[in-house]
Length: 346
Image 1 (cartoon, rainbow, N blue to C red):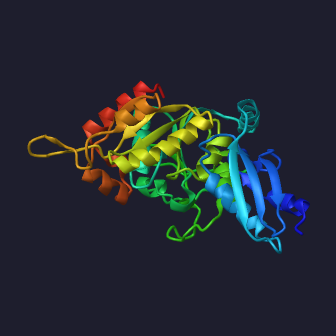
Image 2: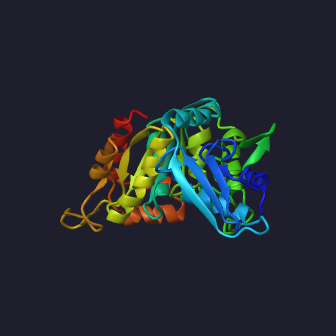
């Protein structure tokens, strides 16, 4: 017969990424039953009915319990814990927030999926802010798919002074830290599990000498993984900007990212719809290549601002590929971005 204590010890290794503690310590395991055939049933209480990383928690539970010799079938049943209990657990996240240092505003840029131009939007916002006279930094939290340094053409390896990493600067003085700047070969894959990624993001914030900044922009990877949870849990964010595109599928997926921000108590500053249209160079007609705009509908669903629509410009793609984003000129796009910045009072 399998020992219940042995099951508990294995479950202590399963972490809830949102809370940063084991599911045992968080009192999420409400019941453990074992029948005569060594079938295990776990009742798991969640802090929210839409737990963004439930699949990962289940996967970790199964992986750890299968290490016990003799285990047959494993069933996981979920329920939602009482609201007051959930609030107490979630409040512990806020206690662990890192200090803001000498940074006035910290904004994360998030998308539900890849391919919507989130990093280019992050870069354009940074350039617009720099052009407006603000001191800006970018923390590239997309550890396994970093691109910010390439977009800015920054190739200088960061160096250390008195235990602090000195981030390289772009031509306009934007401070940048990215995994690509640390790798010996920027084409080398970063094959890391969640805890290592989370640790790297923490170090990019705490071990880098950002100095005095008006804005630190966090370029997050797409989706709702460990990287997003780490940033939202430990960094003192002032809010999140969500980037989407007109495709209906993207609108559906991005809702998960929005719900994740809401569940963690992070203000959503608004929604930017990228690749919204292309302007015909001959007649000036706006053509909606990916369908009609849905950014306003998405923003209304979560009761936040629709910040604006950014058009497609092939010259922007070329500028990003060549690392000359700061030389890129498009009066229409930068005018829209300036209005967006003024709207959310960054």
